[in-house]
Image 1 (spheres, rainbow, N blue to C red):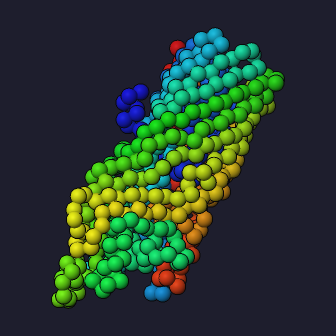
Image 2 (image 1 turned 90 degrees about the vertical axis):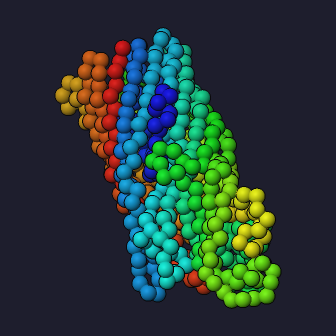
Image 3 (image 1 turned 45 degrees about the vertical axis):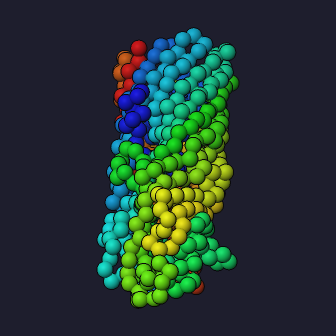
Length: 479
């Protein structure tokens, strides 16, 4: 479990920042999982379904690969320019153990919850936000990952009911390399505009005073940079806890009903003391120092310090589902769940505190508080699936998953395109006496969304495209 916790990777978003399914059995059935035995992935789905397993114990070891395909196209008077994300393959392990002993079932699991991210190289249109003659070739990158170490406990009071819950230890990591041009930065710092966010603090105030006084005449770009370039961990880290409750009810042998509630996380702020921020400006160094003007030159002000992502949380979720065994060999399942993104994704807020300096390139200030508006909508997710045992020991599965795009167009950021809506899923399972193998393949269909920009403020429109091809494999041993 400790090894898996270290290895738990970031996972690209498909239901907002959640995966469409957890474990290859449920994922192959469109993510439907509330009301049948889908292995130890129950700790991510509905913990009560652990109580549906046979007497004894099982260990599940899984590996998934998430293959996002992301493109961002900017629409300018000079034409359209496209950029493709290089972040297109992520491996994601998972581990689960459960034991049923009479009326009680218990165990543990380590799973990646989800996340999102992109990586646009220094040769794309994003790499030179100020359109300088000499391009700075800035990488624009984001990565959010959330994982859980989960301890479930399920009680079966009679043959019809199972009631369970879990205590979850949650960790989160984030990388961000983001360039902003003058129009974007001024939108944040100038009240009264059709703001995409806000920026305040002594660093923003000092820059504004230098800009208004003529010491600075142009901002080529502001660049936020905290990234460890790892596919496993994020530079800014936070830790916390959450919990889940679940229940299943079997009114008849062929029909099972299920319901679950997942609490909002209680994560600490994500922090790193090794962050960077740079501001590329056209300025008069003499005026910045409070002296007579000598002439404007291009210069870059590099800053180092502490970055804090404030109050980043995972939302509470609740859902219901049912499974029906039409025959001994054919089962159908369906879930409806609600993910309350509006409670946690109203804003994305960062606080940068520069190291102890008296002046940053001539304009005073140490602190920058930056907020990007998000205003995500809650999602209703519909998951449908079926499983057919075609020959003894071999089961085929298929499913469909739909969730609306939670991000308003006007706040869509090309670095965070969590906009996917539809998935088709397939899979198979081979069951032996003690060992079994399960796999799933998911195709997340391409979704497009366009941020209209604010043309009057020099902010052009940008279209994001996002699709995925992903798979999961799992080996299970029962004893």
